[in-house]
Image (cartoon, rainbow, N blue to C red; front, side, top):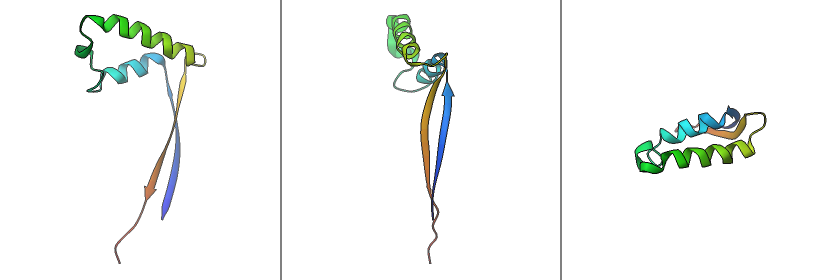
Length: 69
């Protein structure tokens, strides 16, 4: 049996930046002395695409339920 569960998550630009900093590919130490530049440019880009300060992530979870005979 297969189920699809749609999910919409609201994010602020600051929440996206915070999430990125929590990952191994965008952790703060990786930016060295360019951390402020990254944050300014990322916030500018995200703000250009937000709607009243909110970005909506559209995702879905596909769940497959099965058992062996």
